[in-house]
Each structure stands twice: as C-alpha cells, then as structure tokens.
Image 1 (cartoon, rainbow, N blue to C red):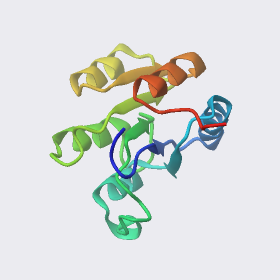
Image 2: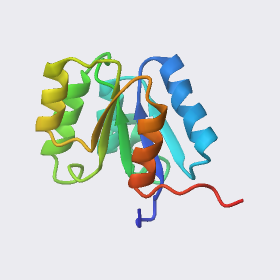
Image 3: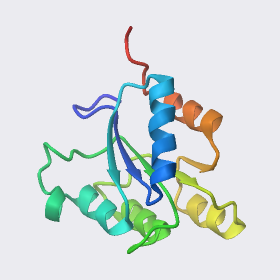
Length: 141
C-alpha cells in the first residue's frame, strides 16, 4: 500500500448488519483505514468510475481494496466484478468477495475473474488475515 490513498477500503454491502460486522472487525483489528460504504452495485461502479455523486476524487478516492458482496440490488456483484476486471484503471485493485454464498457457480465465476480471495460469512479469521496480507497495518499505539 504505497499510494497516496493507502488504506482506503470500499465496502460494497447492502445488508447493514453485515456492514456493521465489517466495521466491528476493522475496529477490533485496529486496522488503519478509511472505509467507504455503498449499498448497491450501481453505486459501486459510480464510485469506482468517479461518476455522479462520487465525481469528487478527493472525497472519493480510488480504493486500495474492494470488499464486494455478490447479492446486490441494481447491479449484481458478479457484474460489478466483471466491470472492475475489464477496466484498465481498476483491474489491479484487489477484490475480496465477502458473501454468504458458498455456491460452486459463484466461487467459479469469482475465481475466473481472479479475485484476491473469496470469503464466506462469518469470516473474522479469514478477513483479518487477508487485510494483513494486503499490507494494511494496525493503528500505532
């Protein structure tokens, strides 16, 4: 994580209870981060493309990692993933699928798009290891 927006996390999660779990995990791990949260696939793509209400790149920087649910309103998570991986500007951002789906088809599709990891909820141990592997550091005490 060496860019000027290091530790920026985009959470794409429509279930507010699940989003709250991610917040709790980040707090418990004392991960140094800035969290941006959108609740549907359409907003995720707008955020990543700096379109619409997310046009201000200083306020909504390109994230260092994307935590992506698969079951999303408006635009499905697999479609969001497809758009990320076909974009020259976005394809190198690590995407971690964080979902309740352990369906073989979902795992295969995500794997085809070369996601960084696929985590089935509940996920605390996997999630914390992934963030550390991606270079996120704890907050200095």
